[in-house]
Length: 547
Image (cartoon, rainbow, N blue to C red; front, side, top):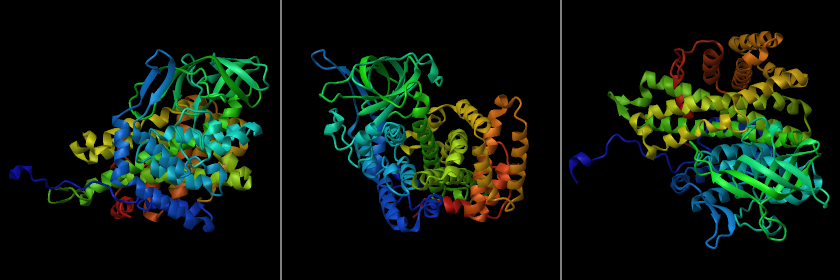
């Protein structure tokens, strides 16, 4: 072989490692929020999932699922309408592992939300697209519980550890997955403008639906929660893909969306025409019924973005730790160290916040904690707004740490970058989240009280955090014209919450740099502009993906 073909100064692949155990911010959060008697079992489960996620074989599943996106088959060879979407085998492998790892079973075991959130964050680093049906299956449970009979029928299927993609009646399957359809072409986030109509049938609780959905992800799911208009207003319905007698429900897939990222996941436009469905909750109360599902999927948007951020930072630190330039390793160069530390701070803050919210869900589920329920009402949309907004600039900067290598598909960074804007759009874009926070502030004073109690636990520990809390209270004291500045208000809520959590739980060097830059104003307009600190190397080392 010619000498010019000798490969030097290229980092080894980041493979063959435990994604969970190598993430110190995540492992510490799990240990902080789980009851001690659950920890040993949780560590074993999560480390096993992390080892799978870090393996070369599973990384290939993620690559192949994205390189071979789903295809729509509307008719069979004889002209019969079938409306089927075919996925690459790697998609099914990813789904099978996610379901067997109990990523749809948070509601059925103690500490389930923290354990599931950590697993979701780990497994989403392999491939983000299949996280959509995993998330919706998980999130459907609280909505279904408004109808005890439906919950008794469907919840065991949704929380099963067996994945079965067959298109047969759900009653004949060991497990089921769910999708959701709210958005219509004329309304977008304004679901009260939906035009899909539901007409009651003779059977109690049964209706037939006529209309369309502009975005329906995971169209091969066993069931869907959808909104349709009755005489009382928007109402929630459970729409099975296959009816009890084995016939296909009317579910006409018009086309699949050609998306920027999330390419392994099928997002479809679908038509209903006399489609059979069962009502979930009261007529006219559909938005209220489905809102718990929306809240749970919003938290998954936070976790999904945190996963993308963590994987991008891991790749950047790994690369810089092996690549030499100008007489030394990149990771040891002062300016690169500043960039990596800045990225690591952002990633750790996202992970810490996401796991804190998951712990609040456990507190509500396990103990009926109303204070934690009130905190979630404000903190979930605020976190969804901020963390998902921070994802894209972080991933872009992390890719730049790899130089030209980060712009090449084989590095995996372009896939992370294409995926990075999605969670900001999904389940309500930025303005929807910001306005939802304002709604909570105006209508639910207990939510602000819960937030202030939470951040108040860190008061006095950092003067910059104390100042930021004071500024936020001043901002909240004047709500005139609040809609136009809602994004600024929500940004400050999220940053104060992140800062308070890091001050309480992160190493001092992490908390100090976060508060100095994000809350104290000692920061530029791009990553890599942290103030001078002798602790940058420690922050970067903490983010290094080595178990």
